Figure 1 (cartoon, rainbow, N blue to C red):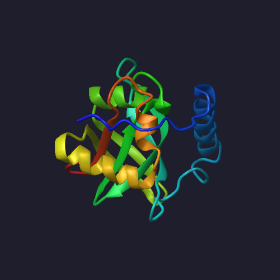
Figure 2: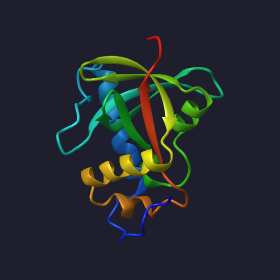
Figure 3: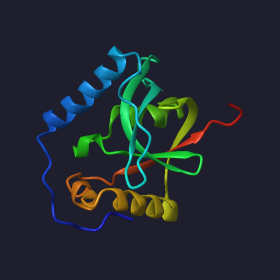
Figure 4: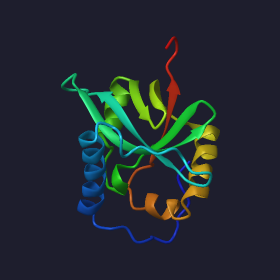
Length: 156
């Protein structure tokens, strides 16, 4: 199911969005994780550091993500700054679903997957409660935005 059409809200130029997330990741790295992570607010999202394995290099790759909690799962979106194409971290997770998420209260081993069907609709609706402009941002992308579930890794 695709997102409903909505009025296109303002979004800064792509370079500004990329610079903001890169700066956030840099501050997190520079402070060795003391700054940059946050727990989700009651009506908002938090920030986490996701480490995946590069699908081409086999090397660890880190990225900052926004997320909310759904029971034991962490929910994020593969939105690529609302630009075209899939973010590299999502392509990496599709190739190797096992990853590590660093949260404010410590690291967590996870397995990533895309939400489908009714589950996706329910999680998308929750994101819509957090961000009233969600459908307008998603309309900027030529493809459906994946809702990504980061589940606790089995046996971890």
